[in-house]
Length: 338
Ligand SMILES: Cc1cc2nc3c(=O)[nH]c(=O)nc-3n(C[C@H](O)[C@H](O)[C@H](O)COP(=O)(O)OP(=O)(O)OC[C@H]3O[C@@H](n4cnc5c(N)ncnc54)[C@H](O)[C@@H]3O)c2cc1C
Image (tube, rainbow, N blue to C red):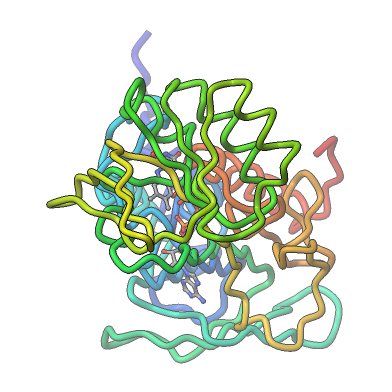
C-alpha cells in the first residue's frame, strides 16, 4: 500500500522539534547537556535526538582509544578505525537539528542550580571554535567523559601502544594469537589477567617490572599453566615502527616478544564536577543504578566513566542508549521498569 501522506525522514519532524523547543543550534537552554563524544555520549545523543530532546553534546576529542588504528568487536563495524566510527556517528546526528555537537570543546565546570526541576545545571564551556557559548543551562546532564590511562613507566611503551601492545584482551588478542606475548603490569589483578590472555597464546611472559604484583602462590599457579613470571625491572621495549620485538631488562637481558598487553592505571577525569557531591566507587568511577542515574537527580553517567570503569565501545554505546531512554522517562515523570 502506498503511503498517501508520507512523513518526513523522522516520524517526529525536525520542524516540529524546532517549533516546540527551538533548535539546540542556537539555544543556551536545553533539555540535556552531554559531556563527552565517545560511543557512550554519541549513542545517547542519537537516542535523545530521536526523542525530541534538545541536546548539546560537548567533546574535547581525546578518546581513550586514540592510540589505536582499528577497533574490534563492535557489531557491523569490526576492524573499523576509531576515527571512522566517530565520524559515522556524527554524520547520523547531523540529521537531528535538535542535537548540537560542539567539537573541541571542554566542559570546564558544572554548577547545580537550586530548586526542583527546571534548568537544574549550568555547564561552563571552553571551545576553540567561534560561536561556542560560554555556558549552557540544562535540565539534565549525561557524563560520558571516559577514562584517562597511565601506563607503566617504560620509556618507549607509548610508541607501541595501540599498535602491538594493547590493554584490552577482548578487543585485540585475536590479532596476536599464538605469538610470544608479554603482559606488563604492577597491579594485584595481574595474575588474573594473565590467565585470561593465556586463552590466546601458550607463550606468555608476565612482567611485574620489579613490583610485587604477583605473589608466590599465583606464580606457582601460572607456572603450572606454562606462564612465566619475570620479576626483574624493565629498562625498555625494543622494536620498530610500532612493531615490538623484545622486552629489555635493566640487567641487559632481552626477552623476545611479538606483542602483548599492558595493565594501565585508569582515572576518571571529573574535576569539572567541582562541588557536586556524587557517589563514587573506590577507583573514583561514578556509581549509577543500572540505568545510569547517579546519586544526584538529573545527573546520569554512561560508558567508561561509570563504575566499573573500562569497558568496550559497544558496551559504552549500549549504556548511552539506555541512559537516554531513562533520562527521557525521568524528564516526563514516567516510571517504568528501567
Ligand atoms: C589502545 C586501546 C584500544 C582499544 N580498542 C578497543 C577495541 O578494539 N574495541 C573496543 O570495543 N574497545 C576498545 N577500547 C576501549 C574503548 O576505547 C573504550 O571502552 C570506549 O572508548 C569508551 O567509550 P566512552 O564513550 O565511555 O569514552 P571515550 O571514547 O574515551 O570518549 C570520552 C570523550 O569525552 C571527552 N571528554 C572528557 N572530558 C571532557 C570534558 N570535561 N569536556 C568535554 N569532553 C570531555 C574525551 O575527550 C573523549 O572524546 C580500546 C581502548 C584502548 C586504550
